[in-house]
Length: 143
Image: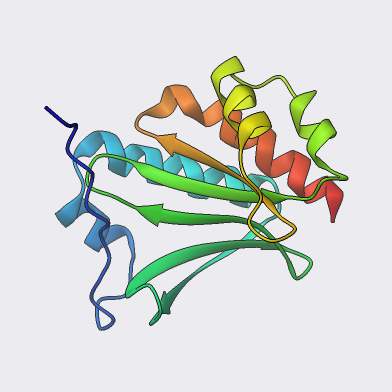
């Protein structure tokens, strides 16, 4: 039996993401995760805005520092995904960070998309947030 693939949320272009919407569509745990993610970005001096992308038919959160994209955030049924992209030049620095070994292994084995190497965090609860904070601060310092 295959594991069920989570469904991406925030598909309605007329429904701008925000705290009230999160409370109505997310369970309490994921609401807390989103709140902590937004607090972490603010504490790091990283700007964040939601944008609706027609090519993917969904809202994505774009975290930027001095015009450089730090991370992409998307909401799913049971998790929050945070996507980071690195180059061959910056990959070794990421592998030296104090991250969960599973994340490092997946990143080391990731297939590049063009010239960029993706690193996706599936954040299901607050235990994954230290890795998220480590990555946003590292990516910010690359800017």
